[in-house]
Image 1 (cartoon, rainbow, N blue to C red):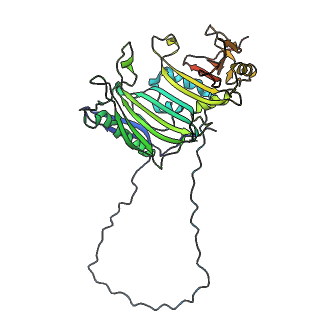
Image 2: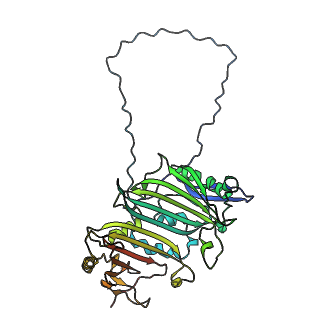
Length: 421
């Protein structure tokens, strides 16, 4: 059952002026905020005194009334209202192609709305005019001496309007106007969500003048929702970053122009077996996996592709999905290959097939094949259009369980393939 996101109130516009550095930088930020319209009574309540003396009328004695034998009625206090527990948000994989087609031009999508569609769990807006740059979700199984849990990291990144943010500098007051801007914009948004700011950190660049970064850390209070996409969770913190080089241009050999922007990331813990990224959870549910295999890792990333990339003709943005499991102790890649040779795929979601050499040809049915001395590969087609692969491998460390991994790339130009004749 699909669950709508209703975190707080219904008003959606917060206008905040960014200060510092002599720049007149004001930004409108879309966020969920409660309606605070004042509806109090403003009638005049001042005291007045009548100067004319009046004489009270004579009083009349009231006869005594016999006491009643009826016990006074009592009214039970209303039962406390309890909010229903949130339900996990589900994603219909049939809607994935429509979503992927939109990444061809990220300047045309609403950054927050699109990040939420891909699994970002909180309604934390960004300045109007920002352009979505990256989305990154990871879920990793962890085990300590005391507990087992899944570690969750989820974030989205935007390029700021005009590709610039106010200066960030540890030598300026309050770490510069770029740091102050984050406080002024995001403190009210995070407070409405039940978070409070704890501290901040500014980078100390190796080269004078930056580019620099600053982050402010927000932690949940008792009013913050304790779930990630409807799944019970222990939320650690939310970081809001200002980055003068949010695309990493200063590290690239082709030296593109620097672009400033913002990144918002959340870290949390959930119970084993929970993958609170709806797209990943739906895909895991469609994947045939041996019953005794254990979930290890999952990720979904919206990534920019270099214009010089071999696959640049498929679009300059793509989504990369990875799922991993570990086999039971003692299970070998040979045994996993036997399992997948007979596994039944959900034909509406996955089929053992591969993309043809000719992009307009039918897909080609595929089987398990050996790769190297010990490993195996199974080409798998997602939604009859996205080519991916299941890999069955020995562990890197001797004695560790064998590994099952699935990787698929989603391009905005990928089209549905016809079955073979």
